Length: 395
Length: 140
Image 1 (cartoon, rainbow over the protein chains, first blue to last red):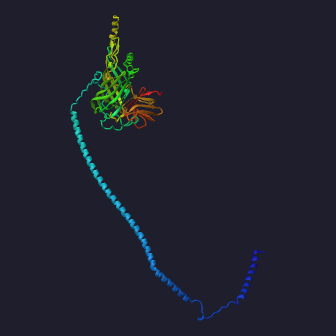
Image 2: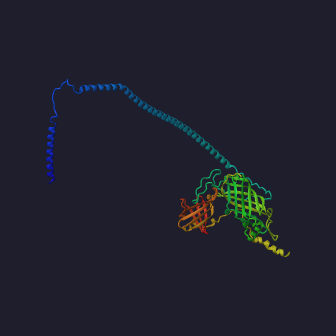
Image 3: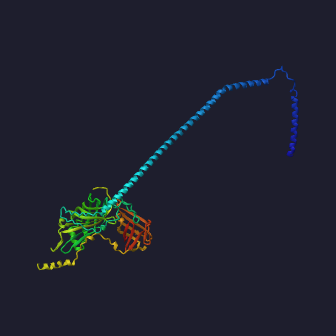
């Protein structure tokens, strides 16, 4: 049996069952349902009157309306209060903002006034500075004119030459004589004393210190041995001769513009290095000087009596005083010296004095009683010294 | 004995005529550097080779520089040292760089070429601040 056929039978049966059921239901309820159609009888009580219901509803609405009307002022007052509260808050905020703005305006006004005052003061100061500058320029022009006139006047005056004072040695009679200085070169390119030197450039890529030699400042000077010599000139019955050495060391402290103001220093030579040109004579000299034990001849410089100080040419002349020690014997000596500055800004010191060998316990050499060296000989120095830097001390 | 004395005295009396005085003249007491006696010529690349030590420094730089050393390598590099004084305690400044020689001008790399001359075993560098003469040394 196919499925379609089964559905046809099943539908037929369902339709029949429905018809039967309906008939049974009609039979069952036909006597229990009665429909009556008649006119309305007012005497018979019926259900609630819709009109009354409406009236009641109306009355209730009126009542509620009355209640709402009565409450309306209160609500309005509440609303008004609320609105007032918001307005008050807003007003307070606006007032605060207004006050803040006023403060800002006041502050800006104060700053503006201060700025105006400062500007006025600056203008006043500028005017005063300009006035002072103009005055200074006028003074400078006057000073330059006076200096020029003074320089012209001085240029026409003859130069007064002050003779070198000859001072005898305190212990031994030393004849101090001026000497000629050949190598001291007045440096025309030296800066004017008292003015700071300009910063130097490098030299061969090395950086040279800006603070170099100064004529007008107290400084330490170191003897440059390779450029210095110390010697003596002696007279003998055979012939005159000199003894020379370059084994020189020493350091001096002095302000060349004020050489008499507490100068100090020490110069020493190697006693065994003196060379007279004859080996036998040198050997005898070393025995006399006892150079095996008294290795150095020293001069301790302690005072200077200037006879001439010329910052323009950077030259100094005068008498250096100190203690000379030979073979362990110390005597005061005075030495005439001339000081200059060469093109390399090295200090040149040339000087000489006379001493007696016997003052230092040395008997003048003699051979066979016929070849004799004179007791008095000339001691000389030719030094070059470079600055080691400025010093602050005054003594 | 009295007969011998004149015999001894005779040569001694004649001797001063044979031995010239050896007194240093007052104008010759200062030290003269020997560098000026060298025959200088323009330096070549071959001259810049090896270790050199200054024998003299003249000019403003001499007041502040005591000694200078250079070593030039043929490859074009160099190293140098200078004992600088006058600025407090002495100090060595050292340099390293490349050198170049062109038309007698030695460029040490700082943009300021210096004139360089040569003599046997010597170099001479001339700059605005001075002149330094260097002698060639052996590195021991």
